[in-house]
Length: 246
Ligand SMILES: NC(=O)c1ccc[n+]([C@@H]2O[C@H](COP(=O)([O-])OP(=O)(O)OC[C@H]3O[C@@H](n4cnc5c(N)ncnc54)[C@H](OP(=O)(O)O)[C@@H]3O)[C@@H](O)[C@H]2O)c1
Image 1: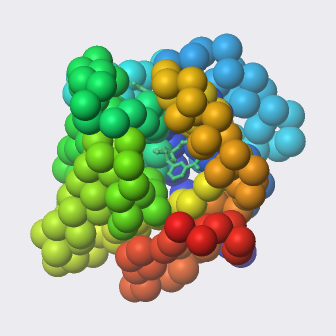
Image 2 (image 1 turned 180 degrees about the vertical axis):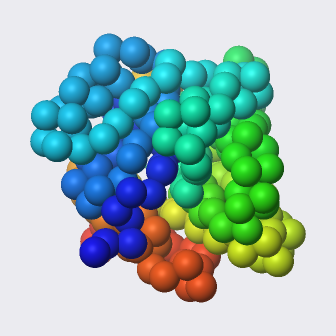
C-alpha cells in the first residue's frame, strides 16, 4: 500500500498549475484532499474530476493572505477527515519587474501571498501536527529562491524567504517529528508568467519558458517526498527542465 493512501493533504493554489497537478497525482494514490484557492469554479471542476476517478476531495474558497481563512481551512480538514497529515503551501505569484519601476501593489501582493500565505498555512496546521507528534509541511519555493536575476529581486526575495522559513521550521519542529520539504521548481508550464505586467519582460520570459516541463513533474516529486516512511524527511529538492541552464 502507498504511504499516501488515506493521508489528509491540504493544497493551496489548487485551482491551476502545480497545485492542480499535485492534487490529481495524490488523489490517484489514495490521498484525501482539501483543495484551496480563490477561483471556485476551477476547484469545483477539479473536485468533480477527482471524484469521478474514484478519489476523495473537498474544497474551500480560500485567500491565503487571510489568517482567518487559513484557520478555517485547517478546521474544515479536521471536521471532514479528522486529521491533517500534509500541508502543501503552493499558492504563489510571480509579477516580475525591476525595482526602479516601483510596482508597489505587485510587491505587496507577492509578499502577502508568497511569504505571509506560507506562514499562515504553517501556523494553521502546526498545533494539530505538534499534538499528533507527526505531520509534513511542504512549501513551494523556486530556483529563484536560490538565484537572483534582473526583475526578479522581489520575487526571489519572497522565495528565499520561503526557504529560510522552512529551514527554521525544520529545526524548530524536528523534535515534534514534523517533516518539512522545500520544493524549488525551474520553468514549469503553468499560468504563472501571465501576471507579468511589463510587455517586453513578459515576452522574454515566454521565450525562457519554451523549455518548461509539465506541472506533473513537480507533482511526482511532491508525491515522492510524502511517500517516504515517516522517519525519512526529504528536506529539499530542485527540479529543472534538463536543458534549463539557469
Ligand atoms: N511555474 C513555474 O515555472 C514555477 C517555478 C518555480 C516556482 N513556482 C511556484 O509554484 C507555485 C504554484 O505556481 P504555478 O506555477 O502552479 O502557477 P499558477 O498556475 O499561476 O498557480 C498559482 C496558484 O496560486 C493561487 N493563488 C494566487 N493567489 C492566491 C491567494 N491570494 N489565495 C489563494 N490562492 C492563491 C492561484 O489560485 P486562484 O487564483 O484561484 O486563487 C493558483 O491556483 C507558486 O508558489 C510559484 O511561485 C512555479
